[in-house]
Length: 137
Image 1 (cartoon, rainbow, N blue to C red):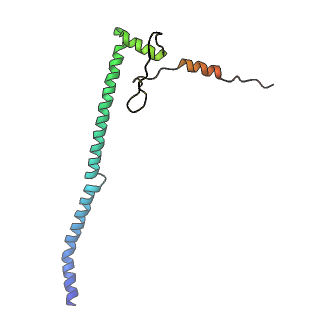
Image 2: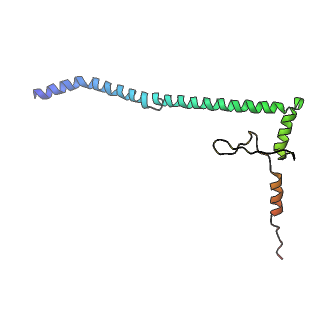
Protein backbone atom coordinates (compact mmCIF):
# COMPACT_ATOMS: atom_id res chain seq x y z
CA UNK A 1 0.00 0.00 0.00
CA UNK A 2 2.82 2.34 0.71
CA UNK A 3 4.11 1.87 -2.83
CA UNK A 4 0.74 2.79 -4.37
CA UNK A 5 0.51 5.93 -2.22
CA UNK A 6 4.03 6.90 -3.21
CA UNK A 7 3.22 6.45 -6.92
CA UNK A 8 0.04 8.55 -6.58
CA UNK A 9 1.89 11.29 -4.72
CA UNK A 10 4.65 11.45 -7.33
CA UNK A 11 2.11 11.30 -10.18
CA UNK A 12 0.28 14.26 -8.66
CA UNK A 13 3.50 16.25 -8.74
CA UNK A 14 4.30 15.15 -12.34
CA UNK A 15 0.88 15.95 -13.88
CA UNK A 16 1.49 19.71 -14.01
CA UNK A 17 4.85 19.59 -15.82
CA UNK A 18 3.64 16.87 -18.23
CA UNK A 19 0.54 18.91 -19.14
CA UNK A 20 2.70 22.00 -19.54
CA UNK A 21 5.13 20.13 -21.82
CA UNK A 22 2.24 18.78 -23.93
CA UNK A 23 0.72 22.26 -24.20
CA UNK A 24 4.08 23.73 -25.19
CA UNK A 25 4.54 20.97 -27.79
CA UNK A 26 1.10 21.69 -29.23
CA UNK A 27 1.89 25.39 -29.70
CA UNK A 28 5.38 24.74 -31.10
CA UNK A 29 3.99 22.23 -33.61
CA UNK A 30 1.35 24.66 -34.86
CA UNK A 31 3.83 27.53 -34.94
CA UNK A 32 5.91 25.53 -37.43
CA UNK A 33 3.40 23.37 -39.29
CA UNK A 34 0.18 25.33 -38.88
CA UNK A 35 -1.88 27.22 -41.41
CA UNK A 36 -0.02 30.42 -40.48
CA UNK A 37 3.20 28.76 -39.31
CA UNK A 38 6.79 29.23 -40.38
CA UNK A 39 6.56 26.80 -43.31
CA UNK A 40 3.43 28.50 -44.65
CA UNK A 41 5.15 31.86 -44.23
CA UNK A 42 8.12 30.66 -46.28
CA UNK A 43 5.79 29.35 -48.98
CA UNK A 44 3.96 32.69 -49.17
CA UNK A 45 7.32 34.50 -49.44
CA UNK A 46 8.21 32.27 -52.41
CA UNK A 47 4.86 33.02 -54.06
CA UNK A 48 5.44 36.74 -53.54
CA UNK A 49 8.89 36.49 -55.12
CA UNK A 50 7.40 34.68 -58.13
CA UNK A 51 4.65 37.28 -58.46
CA UNK A 52 7.24 40.10 -58.35
CA UNK A 53 9.20 38.44 -61.17
CA UNK A 54 6.00 38.13 -63.21
CA UNK A 55 5.16 41.77 -62.47
CA UNK A 56 8.58 42.87 -63.71
CA UNK A 57 8.10 40.91 -66.95
CA UNK A 58 4.63 42.37 -67.47
CA UNK A 59 5.97 45.89 -66.85
CA UNK A 60 8.61 45.39 -69.55
CA UNK A 61 5.97 44.23 -72.04
CA UNK A 62 3.69 47.12 -71.02
CA UNK A 63 6.45 49.68 -71.54
CA UNK A 64 7.31 48.22 -74.96
CA UNK A 65 3.66 48.33 -76.04
CA UNK A 66 3.20 51.83 -74.62
CA UNK A 67 6.22 52.97 -76.64
CA UNK A 68 4.68 51.49 -79.81
CA UNK A 69 1.31 53.10 -79.06
CA UNK A 70 2.97 56.46 -78.51
CA UNK A 71 4.45 56.18 -82.02
CA UNK A 72 0.91 55.85 -83.42
CA UNK A 73 -0.58 58.94 -81.71
CA UNK A 74 -2.32 61.22 -84.20
CA UNK A 75 -0.34 64.30 -83.10
CA UNK A 76 3.02 62.76 -83.97
CA UNK A 77 2.58 59.58 -85.98
CA UNK A 78 5.68 57.67 -86.98
CA UNK A 79 5.51 56.74 -90.69
CA UNK A 80 7.45 53.51 -90.18
CA UNK A 81 5.13 52.34 -87.41
CA UNK A 82 2.07 53.25 -89.51
CA UNK A 83 3.48 51.27 -92.43
CA UNK A 84 4.26 48.29 -90.16
CA UNK A 85 0.77 48.23 -88.66
CA UNK A 86 -0.90 48.63 -92.05
CA UNK A 87 1.11 45.69 -93.44
CA UNK A 88 0.25 43.49 -90.46
CA UNK A 89 -3.44 44.35 -90.42
CA UNK A 90 -3.90 44.12 -94.20
CA UNK A 91 -1.52 41.17 -94.58
CA UNK A 92 0.22 42.81 -97.53
CA UNK A 93 3.81 43.18 -98.82
CA UNK A 94 5.32 45.00 -101.76
CA UNK A 95 6.05 42.98 -104.89
CA UNK A 96 9.82 43.53 -104.61
CA UNK A 97 10.08 42.42 -100.95
CA UNK A 98 11.27 39.08 -99.68
CA UNK A 99 9.48 37.58 -96.66
CA UNK A 100 11.58 35.39 -94.35
CA UNK A 101 9.85 33.39 -91.61
CA UNK A 102 12.21 32.83 -88.70
CA UNK A 103 11.89 30.07 -86.11
CA UNK A 104 12.81 30.59 -82.49
CA UNK A 105 15.17 28.35 -80.52
CA UNK A 106 12.33 26.29 -79.04
CA UNK A 107 10.90 25.43 -82.48
CA UNK A 108 7.86 27.68 -82.41
CA UNK A 109 7.42 30.35 -85.03
CA UNK A 110 8.22 33.91 -84.05
CA UNK A 111 5.25 36.26 -84.28
CA UNK A 112 4.99 39.92 -83.38
CA UNK A 113 3.78 40.97 -79.94
CA UNK A 114 0.71 42.49 -81.55
CA UNK A 115 -2.57 40.70 -82.29
CA UNK A 116 -2.64 38.77 -85.56
CA UNK A 117 -4.09 40.34 -88.64
CA UNK A 118 -7.50 39.13 -89.77
CA UNK A 119 -7.31 36.86 -92.80
CA UNK A 120 -9.77 38.41 -95.25
CA UNK A 121 -8.85 35.98 -98.02
CA UNK A 122 -9.73 32.99 -95.82
CA UNK A 123 -13.06 34.59 -94.90
CA UNK A 124 -13.92 35.11 -98.58
CA UNK A 125 -12.98 31.55 -99.46
CA UNK A 126 -15.09 30.20 -96.60
CA UNK A 127 -18.08 32.12 -97.92
CA UNK A 128 -17.48 30.79 -101.41
CA UNK A 129 -17.29 27.21 -100.10
CA UNK A 130 -20.44 27.44 -97.98
CA UNK A 131 -23.03 25.02 -99.31
CA UNK A 132 -26.12 26.59 -100.76
CA UNK A 133 -29.33 25.60 -99.01
CA UNK A 134 -31.74 24.24 -101.55
CA UNK A 135 -35.45 24.51 -100.99
CA UNK A 136 -37.16 21.18 -100.70
CA UNK A 137 -40.36 21.18 -102.78
